[in-house]
Length: 540
Image (tube, rainbow, N blue to C red; front, side, top):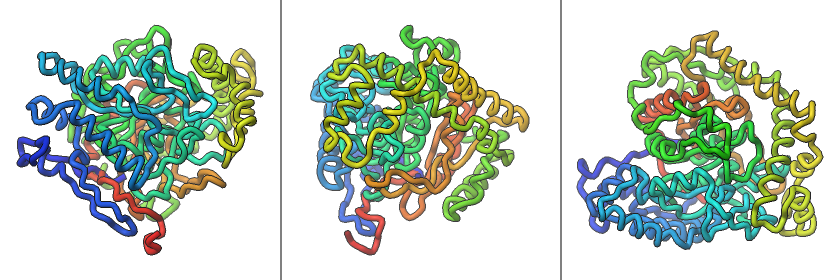
């Protein structure tokens, strides 16, 4: 992920005509390789802070911004490169934006998200005219009767929900041969850097949309890498918070042990702003009670350019071998961390985590069956159980399962119940990951552990499914429920690769600060070029 070409503030740069954007906001991405698309969108790479300044000074409005993003989605997502990142638009978005403009005019400002257009993943309930389907045709027509808790927090903060993003169907818990970014309801999402490469998943649409400037910020969800992996592949910042910092109520579940929503943006500051708005104790999600007194009101307070100085950072040793280009990026990142004042210690966390084996998948299957049945029992979908979902897919195989099947749904249906000894034993083993990580950090007196988030974005392959080049750092923090952030580390063949920082529970301030310091020192983020094919010489 190549770091961001940050837009200078409007006070430092002359203003353009139209809505009065900072001069450097008119970033023009010209055709490159076999791309035929010139990207001259006025809001390219603009930050939440800059959008607020424009609205506060009357140079634009939330309604005007919302119109611009809706036009952008039509031009880029539904036409042109056809990213297919947005599965549904909110028909009330312009009306909501107008109401928020009226509030601003009357002196009411809800905060940094007031009037800011946001996209959210299509497994998060919204009590409006949009559906919540996890990308599954089996859930078509499911209109929630109540907002998810984090959606309530978004609305309270004044965000404009533009629409919902596509995802790997059932948050990539349907098949062992799935293709990330594909759902039976939404089709295949593309990576905006090179269109035939994977956007990863399961928050594929959120990652692709943020990277392609279809919104200001977005929300994804993660069980094991579903925020971090698509953020890495799409060249953006993604944060998987501590499990319990954000409520999961109103989100189609996989695992009560590992599930969490997470903010995604083009820079660390925007991610911190979005995170600040989403926290809160939810009486319907008991794990959020653990966050009492541990959540910050404003995570941007911790963002300092010298945050790495004097810190001891463990770096995953296994990533120092493998694909030479990925290793070179990682080695350069480690050198930069040293330059920024970090004391670097090589560690082998992934080796330590092998003792957990397949226990995590056992836990996920048991909890998925229990959680999905509970969700569907109270949903507006026609299917009311996991058994009925499986039957629907079989009855509609040509449209619901044209490329890969539903082995994971079927094995989950046969999984032990959550009161079984097999489940409890597996859960105990998964939870032991917390002691493994904490023990390693204590042994070497570490402030954080870093690693390559994911490798080079793979090709989209609907027939054979996903594959990896061996670099994947998502599982330890996912199993432990610890916070994990990815930030652009550079590009290989025009494709982004991310650098991860993880720490212990509720240490989001620490890893946000480190990611910010690294980001500001490197600024690897760059807007995508919408190259058509990995075969640069083909012109196809």
